[in-house]
Image (tube, rainbow, N blue to C red; front, side):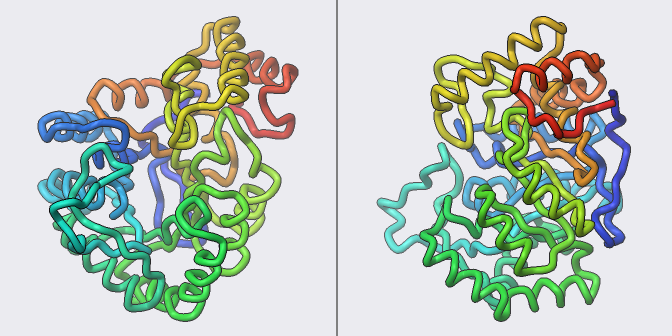
Length: 342
């Protein structure tokens, strides 16, 4: 199966239609290493010149740096030619002690501290801040970001959920009702927390990162099914599982934002063997696999250099034989019920 970068799919019951392929801007926030301004600009130029018109960012990515860089590029393009999604839940502020403040876990980024706030006022303030960092007076959609146990204790998740269901959702619904945004989304990395949010709040789409990739389909029968049954669109936010589905197995391979553990390395070696048998590029298989799920409306791989953008776009055109997917399933490397490209 090959797909066109310009193909669009509707997000739930909204008027928003997304290109099936977008640009994830986390790496421009200097996720694993510093990215100089010229490289950042060249990467965004490569995406635009390749036909990319959907861009995803967040206040957390580089503590505002990703939004600054993306907005500085997009503000010079016609506003009706691109779609931008960003996120709420974090407010950025001056650190208490600027002299000793660390931007970790970002390799670089900006020197701003984070305050989590999912109340009405917190979401409205976050919304105002993202517009200013992007240098745009509109965004197309907003995502409730990282309300999960990757960033909070279970008790804190419960407290923040009360903020969200108490007043926070009213802010997002108000922005949507008045036409300031077209869609409301949720995004986190923990399957149980994602299921909880999809149960307790009404959203138009979900950004599903590591739990649904060529390497892991653990949410196929839970979150993905829930989204499909309820007409909630899915954006796949980490199709390469934080990197290992591009770099392959071996020393330094990254998985779920950390070093890939032995069991993940072993599974990737199995996938690599099947790729070799069928002369298939693993990154191409990773991108095309997630797009085959009927709930998925878009995939947003990241890139930190122009060559990575061009490689990702080219992967959409790679031809992958049906026997490749059949072998993955027969060897237990892919969920037997996972949708695969035709």
